[in-house]
Image (cartoon, rainbow, N blue to C red; front, side, top):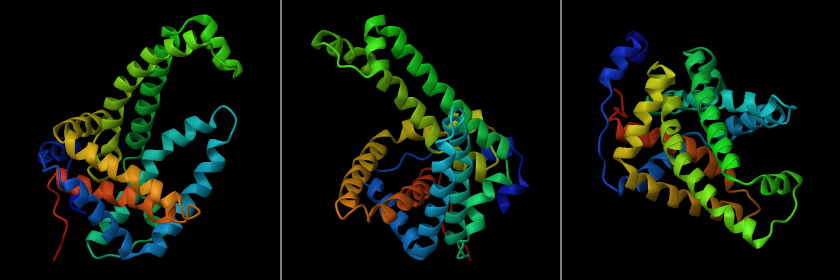
Length: 250
């Protein structure tokens, strides 16, 4: 691949963020569905393999949630290589899921680590903002008084305010660290500014997917086998659009 022939610095300089129309949010969904439709059976197989690995891993005492968070970007990057293969008219293979373990793995894990530490920091800020009695009741799973419940509103709003930029920094980071060999911090900075520059299309995209998830759950959850892979394929579509990546090859 051409990306492998350039240093991270060259890759970073070569990437340019485009401001795209709001309506492109729907285009990302459509293009994502087309990538899914190119090989739906394999996408479902990849999803099942991913869940078979991550669910037991996340259930391990103490370290489970840490390991699953660190490895999530590695698997996400692998799925992006799968999308790239389909765009290049190549076969989607099971090996694509594990491609992130072969290229720039340390930086992909670092993306997960930075994401995890950021969320942990936000959680600590929220806990510190609460009074001791409220924290104890929450830990014990007991009901809060109306006054204590209302006191949760401001810390929750503050948490949401901080979580949004973290999610923006994480969105494109696995694909940028994976396909473009960027360092974790560079990938997350670029992802943040790409989302910030296109915040309205991403808000619309989020609304569309919330509706799709609701519809997918209705028929006994069967639709999730389409919608969840589409989250990954439409992520690739949004990346290709925002960064002006050529989506066809001769």
